[in-house]
Length: 513
Image (cartoon, rainbow, N blue to C red; front, side, top):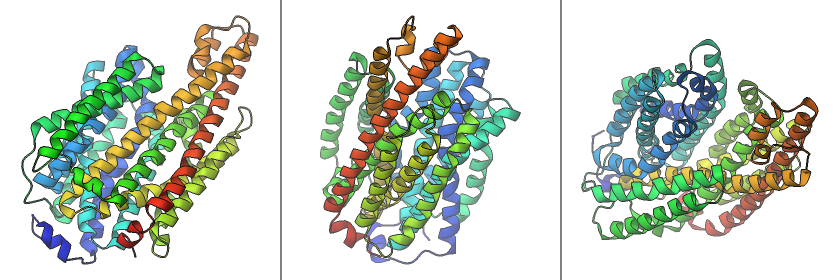
């Protein structure tokens, strides 16, 4: 297969994938597994690296957040770069950079060095996900095979999220905190060794150069938006996050205007003219938003309400992760006989039932109900990830696959960040209202801010008062979880209706099996 393919050749030849493509898919699962694991292992390592490097509160926030900022900021740019320079080339470049930055992070001797390493990891990570999805779309031109391949991709992402806490917990019990970053080195080395033989190169031979002002405008749009959303989740609605979001919208308007004037834009806005593409992005954005927000509450419930260690909490999350993996595996099989819109709508209805289950969790004996509800949520969200991504990629011209994959990933990043922010504000409002109503004598003011603050403050109180503060805080937090679950359930129920209406005919015809 040649290194460069013209758009016309892709449109006229729709051959089934062979052994090389399926082996290539195995290679593409490597960065997917790694990036999913990387989301969870850092949170386990934070107490250890904090004790070693002693970062300030601000430095600790940047260590945690800079990775996500850089990924979100560079996804659009890197997706388009892959369309122009070659998707395999960009994937290998990103893998090399990710391995090098991982070593830098593992042996960091100061908070500033670790923040820099995490930023480089984010930039390198932004090259990997669009490249994997774009290559899948090019390697699997048959619609049924492409859905199966994206199902495998989503399954590996789920497996990585499930394995992250377990592997990270085991490594942190045996080695120093930097060992969790070194997991990337052998994985990326294997990718670099096998990619040239198993992954073909694809690029758009007719694409123009990269418009640098567009790159800058995209960063000035996305970074303030993500920062503002995350800040709102941490501190509530205030001047700083609102101004940051406003700045992002101003630069976003300028970015869109510039794209409309360019012959080879950084973001191909004409893709939004396809109703299936537009609807799939919308459903992914809001569907992943519910998961992002609820996952935050569930992990805090396990550790702060139930008092579980990170490793034990990770083990309790294995059943939901298993449901996610199973659902990802079955989705491509089910969609062979059932139109995608019906599968997505039914899956969203299943997720709605899961959220309604979470709405009845209590602070004392609610652990089995919590896990059961989250199993239903994950089983329902997985088909949305598989088929939503498939619809975005499958309705895009092959020469724009990298750009489309970047938009899909960016939409999911924004969805998760927005879900955390919005649901975090809702949950915090409930918590503070409940704690104010509790009116316990001599309650520390900090205990009314968050459950984590109440947990820390209770340790300095007399046992009887400390227990009373903790009981009130745990009940207030759980009530916040219940309300956010209801909000998520209402959202997924609405999305199910939107799916049936917006994907009525176009999605069925374009992805017919």
